[in-house]
Structures are given as C-alpha cells and as structure tokens.
Length: 388
Ligand code: NDP
Ligand code: MG
Picture 1 (spheres, helix red, strand yellow):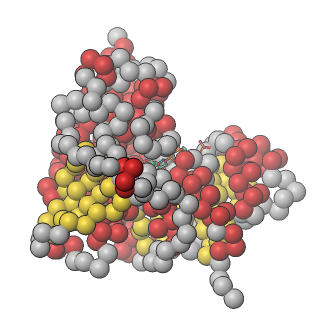
Picture 2 (cartoon, helix red, strand yellow):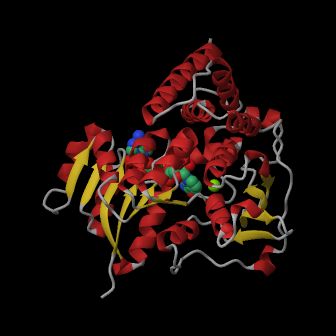
C-alpha cells in the first residue's frame, strides 16, 4: 500500500496556495489534506476544503468564523477562526506544510509549523526576511526541513544539491526587472496600481506584484538567500534577466556555473518541494528553446530602483533592519494599492522609516513582532507627513 503524505496549506486561497492545491488535486490519491487556512475568503476556502476532503478549515479573521462554519456545516470538516487558530492549524502535525500567507502576519504560523518539526515549504518571504536568524535557529532546533519555494531560492537549492556551500564562489539571483524595467523615473512617478500589478512574466498576488515592480521583491529575496544559503551577502549578486527562464544560478570555485531553468510557473518549484527528495509530474509547459531564441541579462539599476540598495544595506547591517524594511514596505505597498501614495513614494517611505528607527536586534519572535508593529506605526506617520 502506498502511504499518503499528510499536507496543510497556510494561505490556501492565494496565488501560491491555489497552485499548491492544483498540484495536490492533480496527484489524486497521493496526499491527505489536514488543514487549509485563509484570511477572509470564506467561499474559496470552503470550496477547496470540500474538494480536497480537508479535516480542518481556518480563517484568520475572527469575524469570518461564523460564515465559514455555516459554509461547511454538515460536511464533517472542522472549522476555526482567528490568528491563534491559524497558528494551531500550522502545528497540526502534517508531514508537509506550505507556508504561503502573505506578509509578516505569516510569521507566528510559520514558526509553529517549524516547531512541529515536519517539512515546511516556505513561500512566505516576509516572515524569513523579518526573523531570518531566529527562524533558521528554530529549524535546527526542531529538526524541521525548510524547503525554499520562491522560484529563485528553489533554483539555488537545486543547483546546490550534492555540493558543499564552501565551494560556492557566487550566487546569482536573477530578476525579471518587473513591468518598469525600461521606464524612466518620470514615467514611474505616474504609474497606477493597475499598471504596477501587471507583471510581464508571472501571475502572482497583488503585494508581491508591486514588490516586483519596485524591485523590493529582489531585495527581500537577497535577504532570504542570505539566510538560506550562508555564503555571505557580498557573494550574492543580482542580475536582471527579463525572460524569467533562468530562475537563478550558482557559480563554483572551479569555474562551473549551474542554472535551473523552466517556464515561469510557480507549480514547478512547488512540485519540487512537494515531492522532494523525489520528483513528481508537473503540469507547467516545457521550455521551447528554438522559439525562445535568446536569453538576455543586464545589471540592476539601483538609482531607479532604490529598494535594492535599501535591502542590501539592511542585510549587511542585520539585527532589526530587515524587519523594519519589510514592515515599512508592507505598509507602503498597501497604501499604494489603496491609491493613497505614489509609486516612487514606496521606497521613499521605507528609507525614511529605516532612517528614523534603529532598535536593538530582536532576541525572540515577540521582539520581531514588536519591531514590526513600531515600524508600521512610524510608516503611518511618514505617510501622514507626505500627505500634509
Ligand atoms: P496572495 O495575496 O495571492 O495570497 C495570500 C494568502 O494569505 C491568501 O490565502 C490570504 O487569504 C492569506 N492571508 C493574507 N493575510 C493574512 C493574514 N493576516 N492572516 C492569515 N492569512 C492571510 O499571495 P501570494 O500567493 O502571491 O504570495 C504568498 C507568499 O508567497 C508571499 O509571501 C509572497 O511573497 C510569496 N511568493 C509568492 C509568489 C507568487 O508567485 N505568487 C512567488 C514567490 C513567493 P485571503 O485569500 O482570505 O485573503
Ligand atoms: Mg521570487
């Protein structure tokens, strides 16, 4: 008899969560779904829970609890609501947990999944950026397996297989450059949320799409890579590659450079994490090199994309700096999406918050959450001054 792998998905209604569900549903009988979580999208969560015969469905927003209980009454699927219930669901003992909540809100559940000691497929980059040192230490302590799902980090993980990290000369983190790769600063000043959210290669949630447009996404990924692959931040370089076919590269001391390639479809790295250390059938379209014709590369421009420099400074300084960068960015991106600030204001606000707030390094997750809270409060003040 083939044993079914037990899985939970945190952020099951989002872009990464939906791609994960798609793979699990295609795989048929191979997986048993324990818990699915969302924030407010009761209808989508309930439908996914019924389709996958999940044991438990949880909404993070406590106000949505009654609607979820209603939607699933009579199905035998247990329901719960509120941030603590999401954290408990993360610790519900699945062998494999997808961490795909967006933002630092995902940090407590990710830590709970890590403490439970199973395999944690990590998409939630904001959690790793904010609490990287603590998260890596907690993983070592619990014996959990942390598998990177972000396509670049999954690529690096694959390129590192079988080699010693001490033999790495450079990690090359590829970046598409986003929708404004060739735009002037004047053009960027005027862009709308609808334009910024339209990524040329990837289909993703709103927050990460804006991060890709400001290139803060690559900055966050630099910090992620620093924690996952400890070669030193000065050995992690960003190279713009507009086609998003090479998802990242590792250069070794002997001069070999290994790359992982694939069509830009998150189901490829998710499938890798889902089957690891084996491989499973994935649905993404194969690459057609003759049609592709060429792959281009260029250096990133941190004048038009100041988020890159802010993130590099934050990772070098360490301590609370990455958590401040992340929190201020989350606030600024939400304000931009809400039409309250301009596109170039996002990095400006992040820079201002970093300038005005320099607490000691967090020693525990509660410290990180306190830094996150305070950086959000300061970002609100900076925005109010901008508007005045
Ligand atoms: P989405 O916005 O599409 O989905 C976010 C998910 O998190 C939804 O299920 C949402 O629930 C849930 N959620 C939002 N806020 C909370 C909260 N406060 N508490 C609990 N759950 C919450 O995001 P993506 O899927 O695009 O991204 C998820 C993470 O993966 C991000 O960290 C992103 O940076 C990372 N990532 C994404 C990639 C992509 O291709 N999309 C690629 C690489 C990394 P609801 O639907 O109910 O609001
Ligand atoms: Mg990525």
